[in-house]
Image (tube, rainbow, N blue to C red; front, top):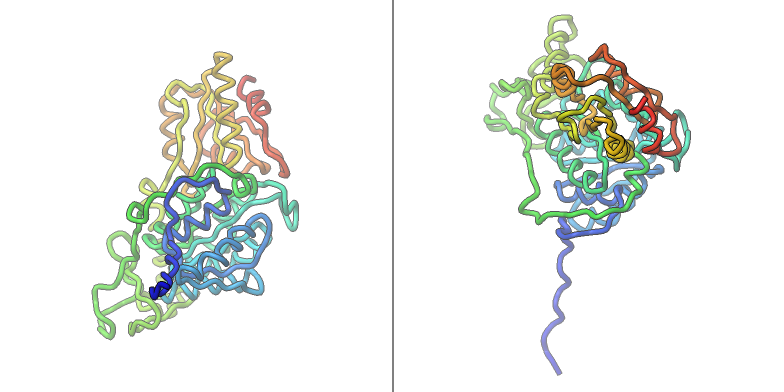
Length: 391
């Protein structure tokens, strides 16, 4: 009889490297784990619930913390607090919950606390269509909280991008000290496709910029920015004298309630994204070299748009697709570049809302911008987009 003790089970890997057949919500959760998420707080809501459920199982296995909160107001507050203490933190929601988070998203922007918010968009407004697709939260992501501030928002178009862009979101949040959104839609969240997860050693990681002065140094100012307009970040509990507030504050973090510091602070909050837009913006070009008609589409609608462009090409129509991967900052420079080349005759903007991205295109050009909109509940077909292209 063997006297050897039974071997211990292998530790659960944080990064499940390999080729998987995976839904978008699950891929997003795995992307967060690969990015090093430490803390998740959320409230289940269709169609984002699978992100929450998957992390409820997986995050404790790798030493992270999962908390189901009583609502979305508490969820966003919890991840801001966790991030202020040094955690990479995440919440996931859909339209009604996203609305409830808006005040504290503005707080995160004002206090410059990095965090990631996943919004799996559904038919809206209000309760809308819980199980039907929508893409109408794009403006809310940018302008939902009051005042002037800047955020970053990514729009995946496949489960693979749900994985990749969630990692990108954590890195951008920590680099620029901003709340970052991953704006999935119901179709992409519930679509199942091949997802390739690389080894942990190949996962990109951008750490937070940390203070060069030790705790207790009287010269340390927690909101003194570097040349890139982003201040190094000290974490609560490390011994630094820090004060975080939603009030207008000076470089010490103390309230400074007059026009001059407010002007200085708010402009910096916007400029730290604006001046780095060229480094942040992501887009995909498809058959644009000779395109006379450019389709601008994101998320699941971009999949229909790609098919429509291919159909148009078979009919001899020189069409191409510009897919914004970042909704914010919007790929303004690329659209201006295409217009300046002189060959574009029109734009076609299909989206599952009544014209949010279309307005961004219209403000950049005097060329015709054809709208292909539906309020929600179903995808826009390639044939519908093709009809607008060939008009």
